[in-house]
Picture 1 (tube, one colour):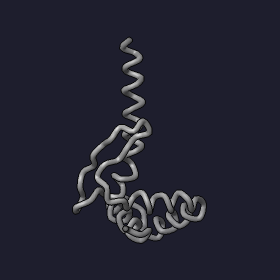
Picture 2 (cartoon, helix red, strand yellow):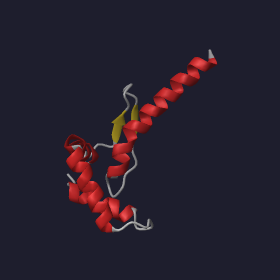
Picture 3 (cartoon, one colour):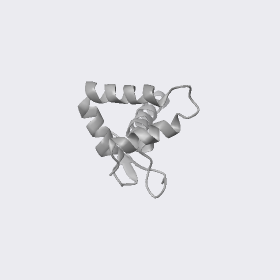
Picture 4 (cartoon, helix red, strand yellow):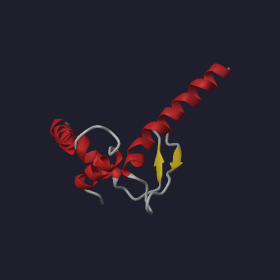
Length: 98
């Protein structure tokens, strides 16, 4: 399981092309953890699961890509939101088609 330190390292690596200092990012992440400790806990737990399949709110299954043998933390956190958004869009389009 990756820790919040590993998550920070992943964030730093993804923001190398952005004009933000590492100090700014550390301050932001620390502030987010203080304001919402439950969200930080959820990110650490859910973002580090080894499973390759996520489920939407409507329980539609979606297989995730592998990144070094497992899904990346970012993909793991975004997948349920994106999959649920797809469910909503498909439902709306089906109703429009009627």
